[in-house]
Length: 459
Image 1 (tube, rainbow, N blue to C red):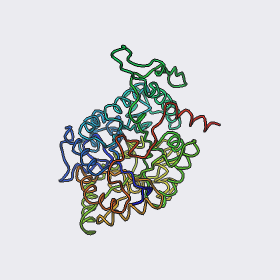
Image 2 (cartoon, one colour):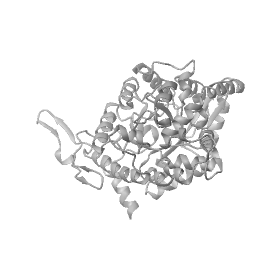
Image 3 (tube, rainbow, N blue to C red):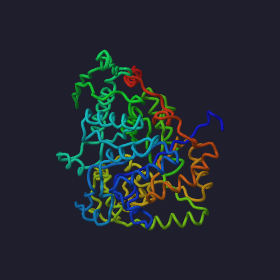
Image 4 (tube, one colour):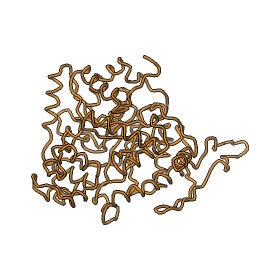
């Protein structure tokens, strides 16, 4: 293998809950049920590290799904992602059981304070030896707002405006300590160099923060930044800040188009597109024969129930899907109210209708089923062929693997598909270093690098 051959980045998609992203996964006979224990998540972490995954990444919401029929009872009765433990505690447990696996956690810029997030992730980065990543989200719905004493969720563009300033404060706080600030000289009694520790004194539209952050700089500089903006204002935000961009593509052609647009947004923000990894979500159903893999896929598909889709659509779009008949069209006014604009636009594009119905949203989104993401299905060779096609066609820089069931989906991928991708030179055989940045091929940021990028872009 050529030392310069481009290789896939692989991320495991996790949730601190009773199921994978596919809510029916808990119904699978082989699904582990000890999800309230550290052993469950540490087992997943070790499986991913054995498979040389670059990172385990936790999605999150800050409320139980309760918008469908304005109640949580259907969601609870059917186990539709109703357990939502704090993922930060869980990645700390995984970090203690692994040595190289990156650890990404979702934290909202809408409901937390920059100082809290900067200290939390700065500490995680130190405690894991430089393996932390922060998935930056603006949150989605009024249920989350209600849990934080707000009456309603902020409007879409306002959330991103606030998030931009949030990022400036967090990065400014992460820059509080220069490299080499710690002296720890017991003989002289000098602990640290105060000339290398800096206050922030930020005063902006949304936040004030004095600093310094009382957390020294980590081996990787600061945590890797994950973002999921795919359209409009979200893509602009992702282009400015994201180092790993998590995306959802319905097919290869759409992926190639959006990949190009995201890389252009990164360049427009004054950053190097080659230093940003775009990774779409996918499922993998792999077996020794094509027919066995397809049988596995159809069995898993049948685990989904209709209630899964409408509960999750209501949660994601901040709209009660129980308030409309399945075949009634969304009016223009109703479409404007849907909080996730990229999701809405994807359904409109795939359905070919400017005003899709509830049934269209269920069908074309695939929400609540494994049809939500592309499914690579077949023998190890066939799955590797499909992934290689997306990768070499420049639709992605790697993948975010969602589990059809846990831990089996990750075990199957590590056992069957990883060796085939390694044989082709498309997947690393071992970790490049100790930090997540080293393993993703990202440069270690110096203090103030992000400000220099902003100044270049502004000029």
